[in-house]
Length: 555
Image 1 (cartoon, one colour):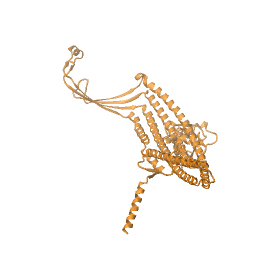
Image 2: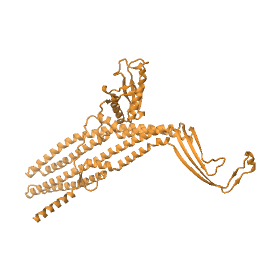
Image 3: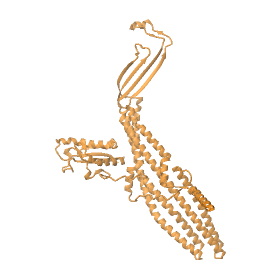
Image 4: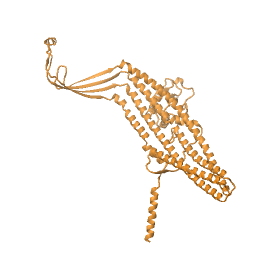
């Protein structure tokens, strides 16, 4: 009984040891999550975001007070008495006493008018948004790199399995060849041909094993995985393939490269406005409080003064400020041209990725059929060879075709999965939840159209609460499409121009603009227009408040 118990314990120990030696399984989701938490590129992009957040305070520092404390110590070694002729001029005997003098001053400067403030705010906001898009792009790039490495490891492991299977089949065919040679049914050359195929298959196993190890090491580097591990089949990416136009529109609205380019253009324009504002007059106050240990007629202790001043730059540093302004104008044009190029490049990459995904989808179906046919052909020829009804040449040709088909199918399958992920990356949607559909608006190439039941309604010049969900979606549409610049047009219902309600029309467009700005839409992307009553259409507009349109000026 004790012997049986000891044997059971030994088996349990051996089983535990084998289980502990098995490499742990890392899924694609696990690898992606680890990479997003540890990869250096994401850490660098996050640090850039923190820098941009700090840089946003530059605008406030331009209008914040400056406080400076100064002190000095002076020692007059010898007493100096000026000639009596100088004393006769003023009735005083000028004299420098032999003493040690200590002086101190506290100076506070407060800007009152600083034209740079608003452009610095815009520059900081564009910088923060650009850094956020940089982080978003880095996360998508790392996600794609991990997926490519993971599917590369799956591909390499699949090829290793195919190579090992090919070795077993080659061993079996070589055994059959030797058996038939011993019976005098085939020549020695048939045996040598089969053994050559076997050695070739063994070489493929060695090469596939090395490729698998390399692929796992690359994945371990990207995802910071320590120790031995293995991969498992990943879920297939879900993307409905069809016309390129929806993918292109999505990319133009969500691509991190395009959005970062738009933020760079906004930053360049804000910097151009800042350099222009440097040429404007500034005004401020200066308060100074002084202490000295020995008062004189020129220096008073416990004394303060307050000065209000205006500074008008006329020609500072030889006109370098004008030169910098002109240089920045050229940088704005450069950023605008680069953005146009980026949009075209992104559109091209989307179309190329879509074609690649569609091509690989078709190839995968054909590769699966080819594999099935090649496996069946080899099976039939192998049976025929064993019965003496097929030659070794035909059998080896079938084995080669089978191995090629078995190798090609997983390659195409995993390449298709990677192509779908590259398409998602090109559209800027990789790793992100799909955008929720709009309920109150429809976005076209020309307008953001409010649905009939969701038109903007007012109480006087105030927006009714029921209209806020519609405006929220308009703000969301503009934030998701950072290139949109919108003209808010309010067309009043027909009526006499003398109607007191007509003065509300401009106030209503301004109220909508303020609401959208409060939701995060940059004010420079909004324009307002209230059509005068005499230009109103003859047919009454729906509702008593008129009609509000949101026309897209630029994309």
